[in-house]
Image 1 (cartoon, rainbow, N blue to C red):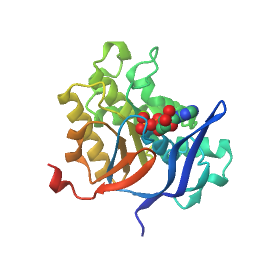
Image 2 (tube, rainbow, N blue to C red):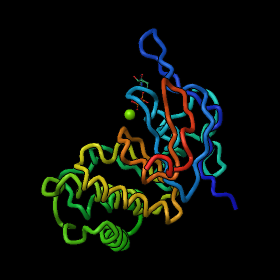
Image 3 (cartoon, helix red, strand yellow):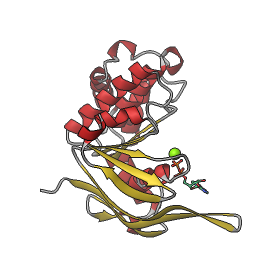
Image 4 (cartoon, rainbow, N blue to C red):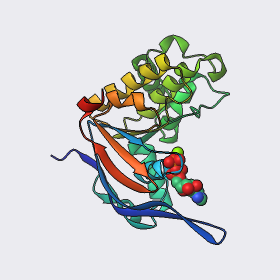
Length: 233
Ligand SMILES: Nc1ncnc2c1ncn2[C@@H]1O[C@H](COP(=O)(O)OP(=O)(O)O)[C@@H](O)[C@H]1O
Ligand SMILES: [Mg+2]
């Protein structure tokens, strides 16, 4: 059985702003696999978030195709896309995106409530996810009572609670000190070992040691920089 989960095939993205067009991503072909932690690196404005958004079904490509579990995403409606996101993709962002009036536990329950999972079941699963990221003792805390690293771990628990095949992270360690960043990376690495595709956009060269693979983006061009971490430790 193939481990491939996402195939980006000759997909490009062009944005129109006023009467200028910005080519955010040149035609790109790249495959992502389950069980793999991939880093996407490159300068600011190079197209990293655009690539991540294509993989996460947040945007359609301007040209080319994106296949998720062999389904051609380009042929799906916005509503079908939203469903795919909810069931197949977990997101972790730089600024955590937690809902401030909700406790850690309630934040983690959110995606399951959207999926109409019964509340008691959602609660059980959320508690298990918080346990996985070692935050059970903080379940009743509001985000403002948590440190940056703890908030990011709540965000990870929320991303994995629906058991998505793909976890997408945009600068997940950028707001964190080195030690909390390393904890987050260990947790993401562990998820990739559980047969998920973990894809992380970062500027941080130190994260390379966690990666199975590094992809480099420059001026909208994607290249496979290295496939073996050994040379870069
Ligand atoms: N919604 C948008 N509208 C117009 N231009 C955009 C939009 N999103 C991104 N861009 C442009 O596309 C290019 C790539 O952006 P992005 O993928 O966010 O880069 P990165 O994540 O590497 O910083 C940049 O020039 C950016 O200004
Ligand atoms: Mg970005």
